[in-house]
Amino acid sequence: MDMRDFFAMGGYAFYVWTSYGLAFVVLAFNIVQPLLHKRRVLKRIARQIRRTRRTA
Image (cartoon, rainbow, N blue to C red; front, side, top):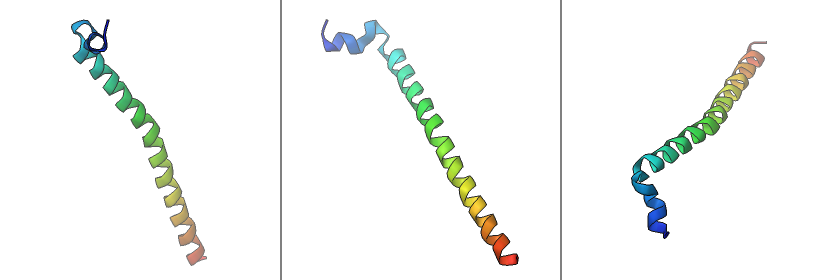
């Protein structure tokens, strides 16, 4: 068995590698999305604190 046979996956390479690719995209999204959301929330909280200090 050589590397070409391994990457061909017995004729199912398209389905196998597409599945791996989609799984990677979903996992990356599940890591990046909460980080971006946290950044937005922290910026909004900081903006609210600055606004509250100005009016007090």
